[in-house]
Image 1 (cartoon, rainbow, N blue to C red):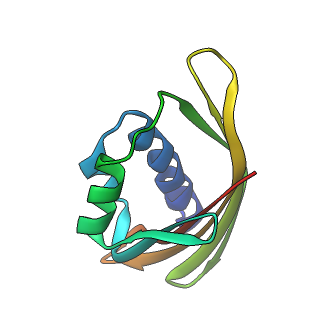
Image 2: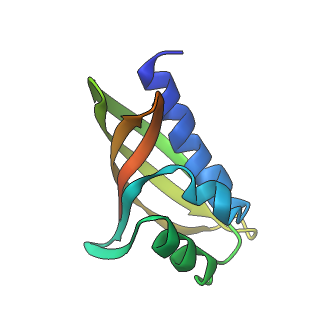
Length: 120
């Protein structure tokens, strides 16, 4: 599998695990020093803080869909950008925006080092 394919799988797993509320699996996608930023405000950094942030967050049921994913790989680092929408059970769009991400390869696996969410 190419680096780009592995990162695409990682990005897909981000949404799939979040939508299923699989907190531990979602946290495992991040590097040890991984950070989550929402609308320019840091929400959590590191596995414990990411777990607590996600587990304690009220989120209405939704399916997050990612489109137009562009990935630029440079050795063991990569950057990505994509559009997203979150569709609720009523089939209405509850949120939309842009993901900006940085990825690192650690021990042969790609991990999220920074996940920045810009909600429109």
